Length: 263
Length: 263
Image 1 (cartoon, each protein chain N blue to C red):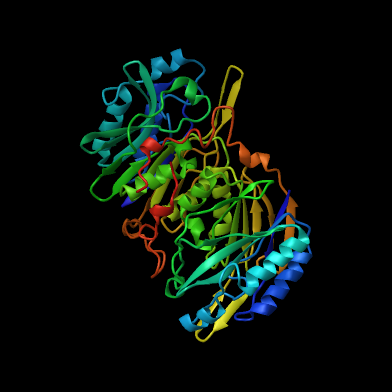
Image 2: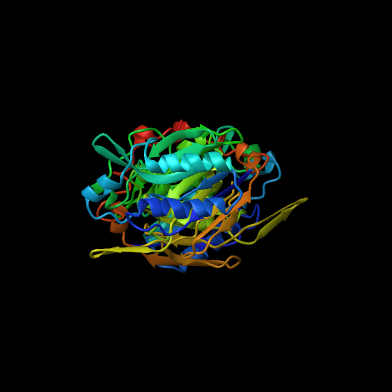
């Protein structure tokens, strides 16, 4: 199975252009599964509720999910990509999952970061794991990583590969994903954006370094911090199926929930 | 408050000598809290149940806990140190906590690593947090680190400082503790042993690099990988009291347990 990511620098508000640019990157690699950044179609640095209301789309009927579905069908692959989702009067920081046969599901970011709390509603659905035939994938978005419960939940629900659309601005995540992948014995694909956004008196710079990490904490591939690029690598899903660290330790069977206090 | 660790290379079975050597290191630093390695008095590379039965001691009446209590009283400090504990017909890989007024408590390693399963019973008590006046400390031992639930449990129970006696042989823990400290906004003190042990056809090499990590993922101090040394550094407990990452995110209040599946 080949999995990978698209790392690029979306332009705020230019949804159609961002979709087109993402499409070029998607076309450039052979992969069974590709992950795109968080809010890849809208950009991240929102300055008012009104502007993100205009940009947000219903799922799966919006133009972005439809375009992604069409690409997934044409390329016979699965795509996980972050978009702003409108549902009635609420807006979510979501990630859609599409495959060769169309829309599969959407995850709504459960842990909102910083000013996202001003624009988005917190996710109101469970962490989802989707069986895509060759493996099971789980989705979390950007800041979800800092809560160990996010990836633990997805892994205990059976995910082999964690798809992690991101717009990272802090320096910690990429290295921390080594620990996350190891403790759960799963692959993780962090698809980060790059570049910076400057709007009004606000500016954010994104850290790039999109990566694929193995269940054995091996950094399989990592992109540059300010380059636009797409990559895919072959992975061995069986490594994420068994949770053995050595002949004595199975990291899931060795858990002792009777002593865990995680209210 | 000054906290630190003793990193040294105990000799297998030489309990009295190991206590004496540890004492020299303890005497060499001014500290309010010092952490010693796992099984610091017995050594780690056990080859039979019989030999560890002979070396294990009752707690708190054994010679090691009594010696540690005496040192803590004389130095007016707190000590957390790993020892083999005998309780009736069971043996535990434990860590005792002593202070200026004597014995405080013992933690029994909950997640046993590799062949430890042949010699020790798994811990049968909860993760404990002790209030030592200037702060609250929690204890976990070595391999407990790989289960995010260990340090999460101690932190949610209110620990400011995680005392982590270790005999690490894998290369992951020291860097992973950056993530553990950050996600829980606590200090961590990993006191690892150094050197190697060769007994019969078995050999283990320990990775040293004992360290103190801050709640902001700052590596405050790290020792060498093959040196014997003791260090203490000043820390600011208030940094572990508040869980704010920025003005919008409190890492504990932002948790959303209704979506966590951690059976």
